[in-house]
Amino acid sequence: MAGAAQQTLPIVVLISGRGSNLEAIIEATRRGELPVDICAVISNRPDAAGIEISRQAGIETVVVDHACYSDRARFDATLQTTIDSFNPGLVVLAGFMRILTPGFVNHYHGRMINIHPSLLPEFPGLNTHQRALDAGKRVAGATVHFVTAETDGGPAFLQVRVAIQENDTAETLAARVLQHEHRLYPEAIRQVAGGRIALDEQGRATLDGIPLETASLLEPDVATGT
Image 1 (cartoon, rainbow, N blue to C red):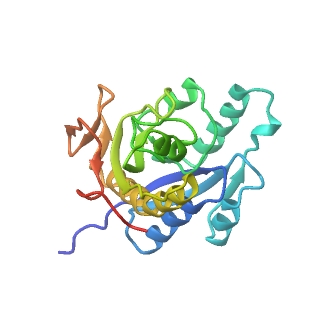
Image 2 (image 1 turned 90 degrees about the vertical axis):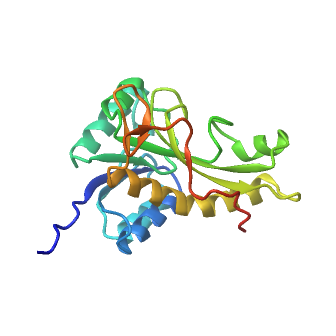
């Protein structure tokens, strides 16, 4: 008897900009690598380039323009209502450049993930690549983590490392890390959708039910890719 088909996890993706990670997620889904259904893409900016990527892929696309709201709480309330109308099992932040209120984050506890362009807990916040260079780091990378009220401070569960080259600038390093993000984020989503990664009652990221002391690596060795 043939086995039952794997159920797909409904997800909503939030963007603010060019949508390159969104595009990587869409392509991985098309190739059958992700057991997800992208129900909607929501942008807080009407001029985000990722909107066109979403529309061309035939995904329902919504703009909730933060500039139309007098404060963060009102924006978050509308955003939450919009997300919930799609009933997602997972909310994926893909270059979503808004600080979210604690109430919003708690509403999606264990159901919202983000990708950050550093090896967290190093360099949360902005300008991560220049900060890594200024600190004399030899390795940079990206991290996928559950979202909590602490900016970039939620439990991390998957990372990719990228070697810093002697002639790197913030721009060249950012471009190389981004290439690896396009592999990292789909794999992280696959692990969450497949039930391997979860957040336990103590707020710890777990892999196959075992708490992670540190984030797993996408591959064991430092990447040197270009």
